[in-house]
Amino acid sequence: MENINSILMPVNQNFIEVFEVFMDENQKTKIRANNVRQYIEGIIDLLLKKDIQQYLKENELYEGVNWSRKIKIIKENYDEKIAIKFQEIFRIGGDGSHFNGSVSDQELQKIILQAIHIVEDIFVKYFLVPEHRFGSENIYTIFSMLPLNNRIYILENVYAHYKNQEIVDRLSLAYLKNKEGDKARKLLESAKEENIISSEFERMQLKKLNVLANNLSNLYAKNSHYANNPEYSKAIIDGNLLVVGLPTSKDVFDTSMAVEIFGQWFEDGKREYPEFINLFLCLMATDTRQYI
Image (cartoon, rainbow, N blue to C red; front, side, top):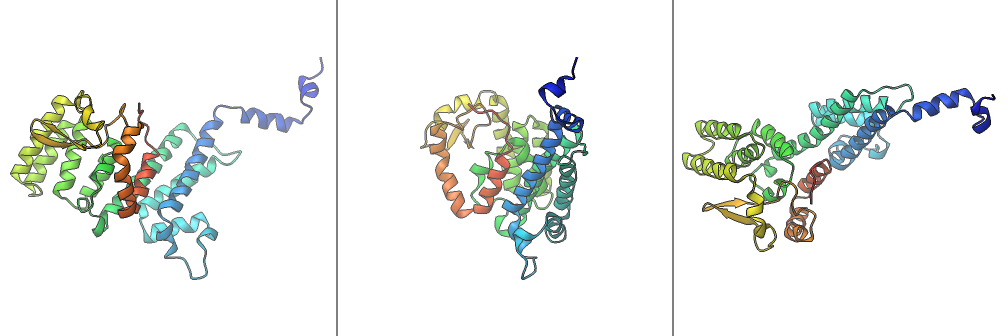
């Protein structure tokens, strides 16, 4: 019997080999790794362009500068740890762009996590700028829309550089909502010992945490009438004011009412805190929560 390839597809054997690789499910890992690299290129252009441009030569155009030089500028003048993460993603993502390259699932998951951490790290650096110090800007409502893991990572790293009551407040609440109640209470205890917060603040915060812990499963159901009413942005629980902000998941985030509630905050934020909003939107792009 005549070879089926000579009848249906009269091509050479090299093409057949390439085609078989092309159809291989393992190739998806390489393609995704290369996509992570492309995503990071976009992050550099969106968030770090100005930081790079100020170190270019007078006759140098940003668009003509290669990625190696851009990362070198980031390493020398912006943040070495972030630059190292960039380099790792470019190396592994580069392997994904070559026919003979190989990328393991472990490497792929590593650079996906690094890509998310890079945006979080840039967020941390934003809060390290004196005029953007956490607690000095009215960005709480929008910041609380971020997934818990992002909020905790950012606040923990900011807290490693400086400490204040605003961070303790938001971080302790985030810990509790992340089912880390002991961590929340230990944070309050250590902050009190370091005179970051007062005894009265600690007492009120513990009361708030206890209320949250007792109502966590049905908190948003109890306060649905607030979330669905644009006149309210807060709910009263056990006599204490608790900022509702954005419900965590399976909520009204993608409904017209949610847009009405949060739309004005976004408009105000874009005018007053454009850099913060850009960071927020980049990080929300990685949000894997399911909304209904």
